[in-house]
Length: 178
Picture 1 (tube, rainbow, N blue to C red):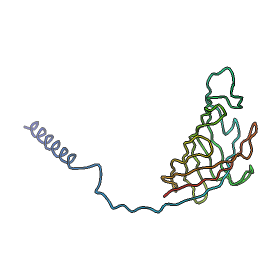
Picture 2 (spheres, helix red, strand yellow):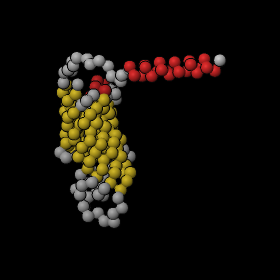
Picture 3 (cartoon, rainbow, N blue to C red):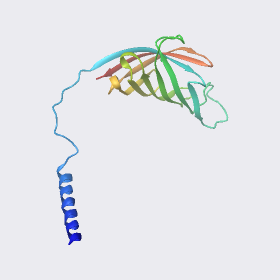
Picture 4 (cartoon, rainbow, N blue to C red):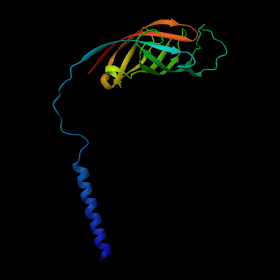
């Protein structure tokens, strides 16, 4: 008798659980749409890159010649973790960093980039902007997090200094976000 009571209890539990699963849903009732006002934010900062330190080539195709006459060989993959600063001076205030990868795939050293501008001070502390774009003439902002949730926009850039060991790029960024 004891075995049949356990069996009966098991079947009752299975039936109850299946009824709960059938009646539950993965969504809730629709709520009215309340649009959030669109914000436009303009940012101005400088990226400081140090070749071999904050920008490192992690892969390169095995080509025996460099027919594109570029300082960076065709089909190179570079990982970056560059500081973002308020000015072009190396001791200007640090406001964040840019992390990502760049695929140098053009014959004129142009690149396709996935980078993330991360901010760690001030009003945008903990926020970031995601970029996935070719590098000419500006970079497309395709998303963000924190205060830049659902961001779109463009990051116009102007190289200030390019030499064998350092690159300083000025960014003027227009972000549309909620």
